[in-house]
Each structure stands twice: as structure tokens, then as C-alpha cells.
Image 1 (cartoon, rainbow, N blue to C red):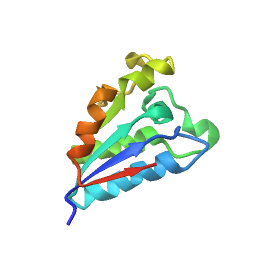
Image 2: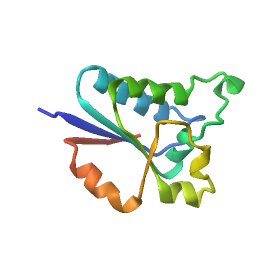
Image 3: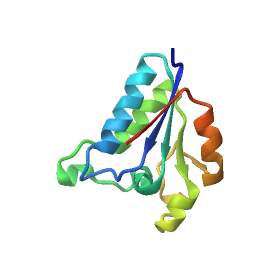
Image 4: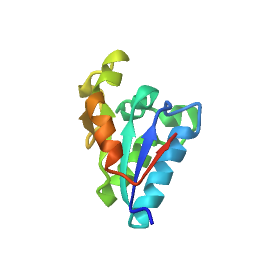
Length: 118
């Protein structure tokens, strides 16, 4: 039986439901006691930006969905190179996220029984 899951968030926070669904899946796994990790990469790094205003478009907050994972001590990583290629400085991320170099992704994936992409 699987004991850990890595949820890859590759889509932007709004306009599509994938990112929100991935964060909620991670939360469900954490609530049920599974070791859960989230990795935001590619356009998924936009989910890490602190200045999101989901209320302006009447959408649920992906920041809140991400911060809900903190209660379950789920590490949440953001790929440095994907931030840089999109012109997002680390200072624009909300508190509690950790950055990771793209070269570390393979090792992170190997630490988990299940890897799923949103």
C-alpha cells in the first residue's frame, strides 16, 4: 500500500481547475495520514505568488488551499528555475514555501510511492 504522494502542480491558479483540484487532493491525502508533498513547477509556480486576488474573479483561493496543507506539515516546494524563467522573484512568494532546484526533482520523486500531476 502506498504511504506517500507527491502532487505536481503544473497549471496556473485560475482559469483552470487543475491546480485547485491538485491542492485539494494533497489536502485529502494529508488528512488521511499519508505523507504528502506538493511541488509547483512550470506554470504552477504562479500558485505561489502572494499577490493573488481570487475574490476579484469570484474564485476560491489557491493560497488558502495551499496554506491548509501547513496543518499537516506537508512540504510545499517551488522550482527556482521556473520562477526565474517567468520573472517571479522569490520575494513575491507567500510565506511557508520552499524553493528547490530543478536538478533535485528526480530525487524528490524517488522519495514518494505515488506521483500525480495536475
